[in-house]
Length: 168
Image (tube, rainbow, N blue to C red; front, top):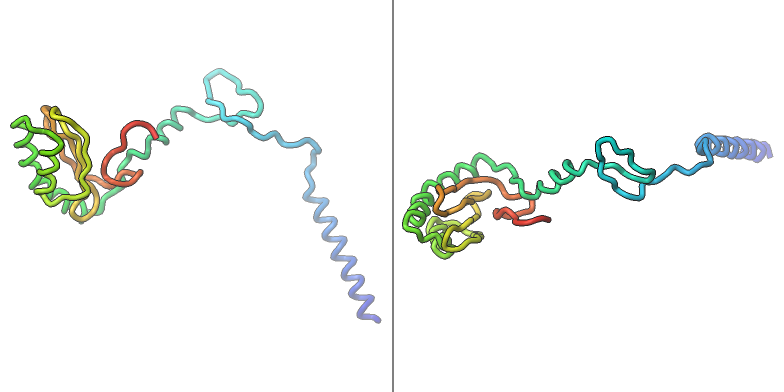
């Protein structure tokens, strides 16, 4: 019987502690906290209406364009890509000076250099290209009447080697 009385007192203490703990965590105000219902661009000298979550439109746009950025490339991948560029550049320069910068001619030069995963966009006036590097990463550039560009870099953050066009 003593054990029962002791356990009942223990139960009563536990209930009292729980109830007092709940009362201590209750909000001090009965008014609800306002929740943002719209995103509003911050403008200098303008007070935003209640319910707006402010944001910096320029900063948001800059973050949105990150999908075009390139990831880092390992030293081994970069060295292999630079070696492939040494082989590829003279063939592309020959196309440029001959005025035959069609996508088909550029693709043939990239394949002859042992590259795969080739993507390009262009016409008879110029071709922008990308291909997988021999040890990862990418080789990309533009063959046109302007000076030839051929570079090595990591994959674009959206994936692959070709830089996406337009918006996301």
